[in-house]
Length: 366
Image (cartoon, rainbow, N blue to C red; front, side, top):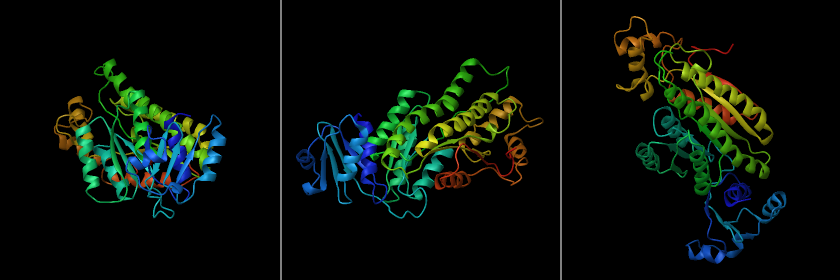
């Protein structure tokens, strides 16, 4: 086991009284060096252990030595993991105290989801290509002066190494991973005549392959945690779309990726449930208030108007009115609607492999 693999194992062993966060230091491999680095606690609150090749034996030894008073675990010749506390034995909701990554988390649906989950007590990793906007959101969250943590990690979900790095940085800074929300996505509308192969490939890379990368690298950490605490459930959640439930005219590249995402969800769920990793998709309706729809230059209202997707529409307002009339609830989907579905998915322990509509009745399961 390398250092990245050891950290979540130690974090779960330290979490006997409720989930904790940790800080990991690869070059600090003794109690004395921890003290020099500014960590001042009695030596009997520091466990020193030599990890061997036998993972099961290491986990057993770790669990036997760690107590509720343990402040740090030193791995001889490797590094140290310091308990930052924050363990909540009786959380007020199902996300409090959990470490959650939100990709595409800097703005739009992702930013709203990150902010609402942070308000509920989750430790949030905002992962996004847009570093400027992502860091602004982190500062906004930290200004709330809550005890839970918020960090920004840059990521390109269309690149496997970048996603792996995102997960590893999360582990080093916070200790592990309890849920990942694969939200990052792009949309370029167009029919067969307008869609060029390069745009199709890009959308597939981000919307479909990016979800695979998130599940692949996140599940590796989650499996390690499940070996320490067999009662700890974790979640991989894809933010899908109503376009994953029904074909979308002149929007096939997006719909195809979302249909494929549900296939991944069902398949991942079968593979990972033995590790207590639930995998579900949430399928929101149209988020009219977000930049995806409302951006005056690149938003879907503008794209659909220019593509002639709405017959007879002459203005953006015509396009918006057309889509609002299709929703029985009479409005677009909101961040709060999606967050409620996320909290439900994390809260329950029995459901996996589902595509949950949050569409105001516009699309219903068949």
